[in-house]
Image (cartoon, rainbow, N blue to C red; front, side):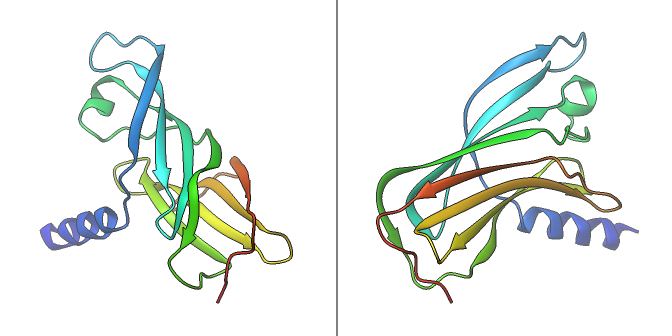
Length: 153
């Protein structure tokens, strides 16, 4: 059992991404532990320099939230934009998961997916959550127009 727990811990943490927290607002008060809140985070595209995505998402508070075992809601909103000169590191796949954020202790993940539309010079970003047993259809997209097309594989 200890080996299984260690394996799951390593597997889950290896896929996670660091997001910079810009700020948060409280949505409900909790007597014990932190309040429920909405957090705004920034995530830079790791392969297309000059694009940053801003993600707002619910964070569950209380005692379970304080110790990291709470399951966050699946609602999220996304806005991505050009924040500097666009530079890509080489040909990119047309669709790629660029960030995964833990939304529960083991089984729920919030994804940030990049899609490239080769017919138009745009990059589309999609956020959604999945769960080991059942995911959620709740999602949000953002489109970044570009001066020239991105090279794809």
